[in-house]
Image (cartoon, rainbow, N blue to C red; front, side):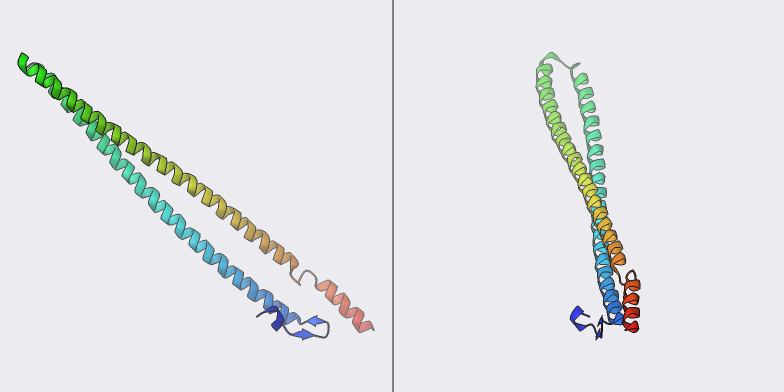
Length: 172
């Protein structure tokens, strides 16, 4: 119902029309609020799922890092055993050792950089989720405030003025 469709009486709009109009408006706004809440909940679940995925990936990367460290330890042990070899093997072993360490350090640096990158993404995601929660809380507060304002603006609060006008009219 639109405001121009409300029935008019002798002193303005009829109460039933006004009440029906207000009820329809309340239902419309309530439906919209429910849709927005459902959408926000869906987004929040998507973000939670993404956080879980990133945390799982972080755990996987930490596992890989620990394996790389174990491999580095195993290579170091192998290098210590290689030092016991003959003198002509020492030069060759040293060059292999340096190459292996550089590769491991490069791998370690790359994995550490990736890990830091994932940690940064998780931090950003957490900040984003916190901001979204604040936005949702503000929207809920605004909706609550609007509901209170609608309740205070409703004709039920001003019926005494309407009744006084009726009594004055009847007295005439």
